[in-house]
Each structure stands twice: as C-alpha cells, then as structure tokens.
Image 1 (cartoon, rainbow, N blue to C red):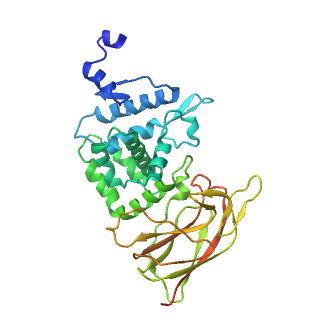
Image 2: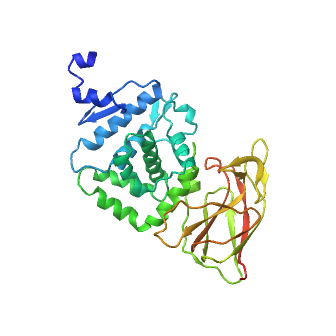
Image 3: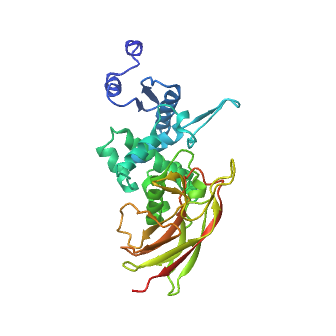
Length: 339
C-alpha cells in the first residue's frame, strides 16, 4: 500500500503482480512480490535486474527462451560468507541450499511424466505455457547446459554481444545449427539424468565419425568416470548384435573402494537400474527422428536389435554428480549376430 500511495506502483504493474507472476520489469525498473525465503528473494531480484540489463539497451526483441533462461541462469546464486561475495550462475550442489527455487525438482517430475522438450519446443512453450513454473525450469536447464558445456560455452557466451544489434538469431544459427542433431541428442540425454551437482565436463560427449561394424566385430573401452561415450560404431536397422562386457571398476573411493562389474551393484540404484550397470543408447542416423533416445540395459552380456540405423553409445550407470571418484573401465565386444 505504501508503494501505491507514493505513486511507485503503476496500476498495470499492480495488476500483473496480482496474478501468478512474482516479478515484472519495465525499462530500468522492476517490481516484485516479497517471497517467503531469503534465498528466493535474492533470486527474484537478480532475475528481474538481469532482464533490465538485457532489454534497456533497445534493439529488436530477443527470443523469450534466451531472456528468461539467462535471467534464471544468473539468478541461481550462492553466498560465500567467508569472502562476503556472491557467486552467480552456479549449478546447485544441494537443492536444499536453494529454498523456494525447485527448478531441478520440476524438471525431474516433468520427465517422469514423459515430458522432455527439445530446444525447438522451448520458444513455443513460452507462447502456450508461459504461466507454468516448469517452463522456467526447462529454459534454465537448457541455458545452463549451453553455458556449462565445454564445447558450447564459448560460443554461447559470445551471443551476449548481440543484445541490441539485431543479429542475435543469425549468430545463434551460425554458432549451433551445424551441430544441431548432436546438440539435441546430447541435451536430451543430459536432461534425462540432470541432478544437483551435475559434472558438465565429465558428462560432455566427445563425438566421433562412426564407421560400419566390421564382420568380425569391434571392441570399445568404456571409462567409469565419464558419461556417454561413442563406440564409433554404426549399427544397421533390423540387424541383431551381441554385446559382451568384461572388466572391473570402482564407483566410489570412500569409505572404501566400491568395486563393480558391468552388471552393476544392486545395493544402490539410479534410473531404475543398479549403479554401475552397462547401458547403451543409439543416436539415429536419420536426423528426422526426434523422439527421446531410448536407453537400454546391457550388463555383462546382452543382445540388441536396433529398429533404426545409428551410432552406438555406452556408459556405466551412475549419477551425473558422482563421476569424479570413479576409476577403471570395461571393455565391450560388439559383434553382429548371424541371421
């Protein structure tokens, strides 16, 4: 009431804030409702201030996914009480330290409901579902993916040079369109398993040109301390293949080494499978296939029969935040099965 009486709360802003939106910016000013937690009050303040910075320079409108995703990126912050400083654009290591935020929980819940939007669907979400907090969560997750990924970070951050010159969309296309299929494939796999403390450097996929599988098969080494790894092998649709894995590795080093083989250890599970279990996924050769990549349990020995042609990727099942203390690898023999 005090702000309204002083003429500092325009009627249209008041009406906007009485809806579902907790904040609103206009030019170099912003207004916000008072959240219940100290963290989220700061989060909302930085979110709206980032909007002011990005839009007050003028120029054509920027894509909503970029405006909202970047505001969410910087607003996700952490205090450093010893140095009396704030760190922005952090990846939460423990969601409980970010009360009121809940973005990771929303992403995980949406995925369990069978929803994982590709990038080209994000802009449409802002037209059809802009009132859902899940839309903010998915946009934050995608922008965080681009900003933290060792292969995409530099070119993504360079987009900030084009806030007002009208070249943003063209520069985005130039920077990312040549790798569009690989980017979407990797984004969907990461979003599927995104957790607090995700180690973006270790989960980054190293893409290689794949080759048809030789008649006598081929072996591929799968490291325990990394995410999805390309075998460099291209499989054919309708052909059956035998995968045989051997080797031992550790999934933790404290309080003592936790040793596993390719079937995994059933003491603990991730994504419905024992920790350490060998899993596979296929990157379709046909770029028009855009469905969610299907992760298949392999273990020490399994037979697969792809419905589409594509490159085979393997990894040892583990949380994306717990790869750094893993050691060792397994060797996987990939062989065609005689018809």
